[in-house]
Length: 317
Ligand code: HEM
Ligand SMILES: *[C@@H]1O[C@H](CO)[C@@H](O)[C@H](O)[C@H]1NC(C)=O
Ligand SMILES: *[C@@H]1O[C@H](CO)[C@@H](O)[C@H](O)[C@H]1NC(C)=O
Image 1 (cartoon, rainbow, N blue to C red):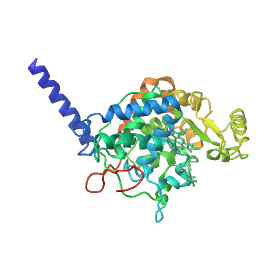
Image 2 (cartoon, rainbow, N blue to C red):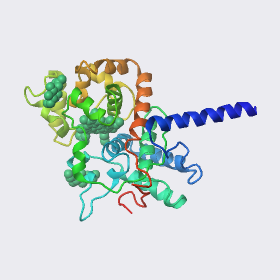
Image 3 (cartoon, protein in one colour):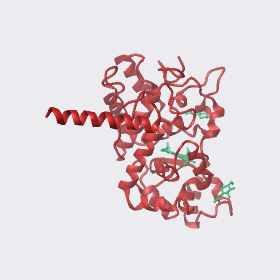
Image 4 (tube, helix red, strand yellow):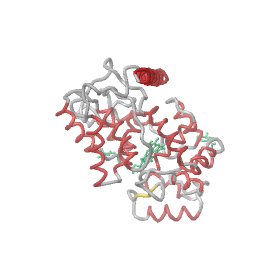
């Protein structure tokens, strides 16, 4: 008995150490808040679940917010900062792209400040909330290391580093490789588009004659119909906008990708096999997605030397 327990313990330590070494992010761990804020996980999960019970479309919003956070200045909660008199923040960029769900993060933060003041970072809250949103929507369950600190910079001009919906596969591969992702990981992460919608303004350029040879006439009619209701009208990425499944990839195979950056993943020979694989095998998509999400959640993580635990997720201390 005692030996088994010791072997299990050693294995856990080895696995944890391996994860940390692979990502080169020391100081983060699965059990980071075990002693300092033991109920952090249930508080995040319950708050996310009750918000999504009321409005399931917010699962997409939380996932997208986490992605935008991590790609700009690392996963440091910079996307949550409000603009001030002297500073226009990331979220006020046109590429804040209809981000929603900030009030869920505020709600969680308020509860955590009562339980364990000054302990849990906004960056960790967002990373956990995105993970719980994926699970709520029917996606994979996975754990993420915690211990991110919140950044002190949020500037509108940094958002030029977000991928544009007009990019082709080689541009996407290049952009994601700058953050350490393989082409396959980029395709798996794009599967986040199994949730949510794009507004007409994000794809209407495709409707101009000859602008996008990838767009077939049937699906062009669908997109035109959506756009006839205005720039802000919404087109779901796949048939089940609130379900985390592999129908997004099936849509790409049928040439029904909403954004140029979606359809290019099927049309380009360098990524088509990954799309076909995920369209046929949802379990493989789930596995690759969760691994890539953990990796994304560790991008340029900050520590005590260059970050803080914000008191209010909307402003630096
Ligand atoms: C590959 C490069 C990507 C591009 C070019 C891109 C672009 C976009 C655009 C233009 C929209 C629609 C915004 C609007 O019209 O309001 C969108 C929505 C969304 N994106 Fe991405 N995205 C990318 C990758 C990702 C990744 C990696 C994730 C998460 C893992 C993600 C998650 C989402 C979600 C969930 C939505 C729907 C949001 C909602 O319904 O509120 N995207 N994306
Ligand atoms: C997004 O930015 C626009 C300005 O480009 C601003 O009017 C809008 O309030 C912002 N949305 C959010 C949710 O911050
Ligand atoms: C992708 O776009 C870039 C920039 O417009 C262009 O140079 C390149 O040829 C395109 N690649 C493919 C495969 O179409």
